[in-house]
Image (cartoon, rainbow, N blue to C red):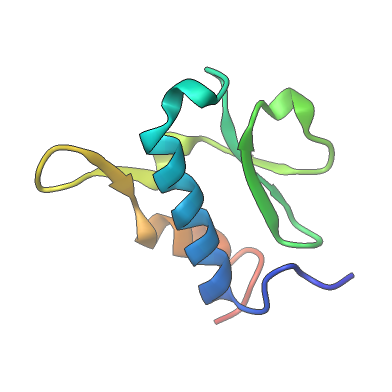
Length: 89
């Protein structure tokens, strides 16, 4: 099965965009939302883990950090570390 993203850079960018959307729209997500990754095809979503089958589950807080202004932003280094489980550099 082919992965959705051709390389780790595309995958990281996608997860970073999703996390930015999550930060700015918390009210649109379930309170127990997690980052879910379907490993065979490299697709990720932020959703209720009970709604997933065959996905790896990650706590969202593991991929967020505080900016110098105090706001939450995606932690790109943490995303890259997780992405190495699915893609090689």
